[in-house]
Image (cartoon, rainbow, N blue to C red; front, side):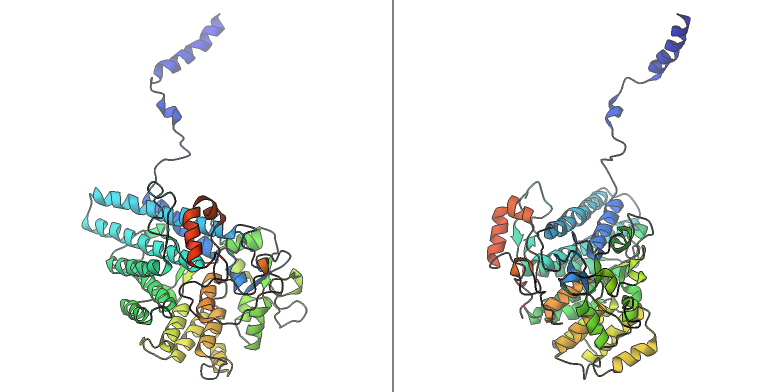
Length: 488
């Protein structure tokens, strides 16, 4: 009895000291119900960069479409099978659910702070800058979706309560609205003040750089529209250029990855950590660089194992033996290798194109073309003397290289956009060069390189009425239908 009392005393003391309120026991401390706008912004920015950087065949097959890369033992994605792994569904979900939705919720929280603001004038400016940057990156994300699918949900998107089944808006209308929003956001930024600071993984909150990014995106989108509406495109190109675009490597948009998963570069995950050997350089790409004796080959690829000093790629859309071809250098396999959204090299190619399209951006097509190649080679560590030699080759020099201005700019852009499959694909679709042939065997007997993704299967099931309308508008939901800006 004595022992039992000794046990009961501390138990009774414990109950006596406790509150009668036990509602706290229902709180899951590992699943918070509130967060900060900065956390949401960082998460969305990271997801956005991962999607454009990844080489997972479940997420991103654009390097395969532009034949910079080839597959080894499982070539179905290179054969244009989009549905086997539901690639459009993943691409769609990442941007709408993981990127745009988080950007929207971050902006909603910032607007609530603004409505109840108590702080210094400088803090209010910083808050407004954050909202503008979210608008810029939301525009970038919608631009990717339009350039992938065409018409997409936009005006009713992200509003599940009011529009659980959103309509599809016209792609051209979306494009012009995005350009207008980018213009407004760029001009609204107070470049003397900061924004997200370390929560911004691309520019560290630098508002001057975000303004240039917004203006550069306006420039790129306007060039896409030139074949649709030359007068509008010209005005937008010149306005963006006047407001200030990315013209130096220091202003290029990169995200520096970390050396520990899940914050490593997705390429490291797919090419190294996975232990798989699914990809090699494509012979289409390697052969072109071989013909031009391009000094970037040593930066992009390992030497051909059967012949030292030479480079060899695998066949697109066919079975390849991994060890019998050149591979990727350790550069892009590094955990911390940065992801990229925009570079000054890409801008110079766009300006060369603008000159040829009759837009008075200054300089000559040749000067911008040379500047673009130089910027690309400099970024990859090519020696200045080798750059000079390359530009002087008759096969490279703007005055003597083969083909029309479209072919010259597109082929060099294709090389400079190595490892940036999505933008290489966009340039290919706009300029129709380089000449890329479909592999011998393709899914659904597709005879050409896809011009768009088909809409996600889940849209066909859950949002059938709006999907059917969008599909009917373009004459059928197929991968070979050109987008509204792809006129020729």
